[in-house]
Image 1 (cartoon, rainbow, N blue to C red):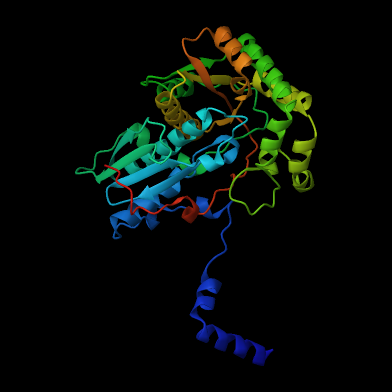
Image 2 (cartoon, one colour):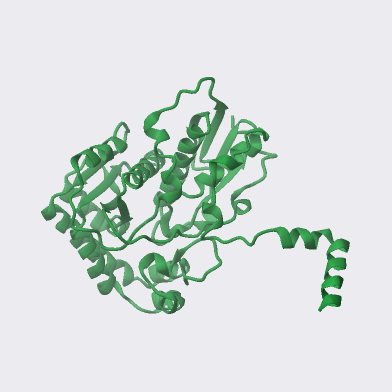
Length: 376
């Protein structure tokens, strides 16, 4: 044993790369991206190093099926945010509506993190639909004063804590003060939000959720696409939906992708989500026009809402199925009598059961070279 250890030490001395590999911690997609500490911000580092640190908060934004359809290019002036169309959902999201909202959510995280670390942030969106150009140009400069915006500043700690919780919520009324804070989070925008604590209206929405499950699960192509993003609990992949996120144990999660592909479980999942939606203390439906600018703005509003929900000690989950079925989306718009198209349905309430984070990809997978990029 002594000789073997001695030989290993000689090998390490002869091969510095081996030493570096041994010193480098193994990337854990469930843990490493969330190990963010304010004191690690590179105050004495270069501007590129500082802005790259901000990207680590952006990638914690929500996305459909946890596809994380974004890429970032960091320059001295700011951060260019690109859509990664290789990660789109052509069946569930044929118009890239949810993809654009995911980009908007990531930009909101950038806004909140940038403000926290003392940057002035200006976002210019590109609405040309040119896939070669960034969707957003986030221009950043150091603040000249110590002034901050308290409302957004207080959202910063929630970025690391935000989780989608699909468990049943408590039969507990949300205090008026908290509902008022949520209303403020979705105000002041060209897109709008509809909030309901009305059990009868929520029941009608829940019925549409159940019907949408049956429609989507009856589509073989939809199940095939969903199965590509379902992951076992012990996955090392940095994206997708682990079984634990939907309440599955290790064994059940291991067969989850195959079961999703092979079996129509629309009635089972529909009945489950119908009950969860019907019993939700609060439903929030974000609505706006079907244009890229509005989808991006809905995404920003969504993340501001979710961070506020998290800050207030509440939980949330999504019921977007009726919005992904055109006929049911039109029915939902008529039911609510809203002036624009519903874009997202969010269930909000209290839950005693905590859920683990969803995985994230390594930062190097979402960073791209900046040699040919001008974010001005």
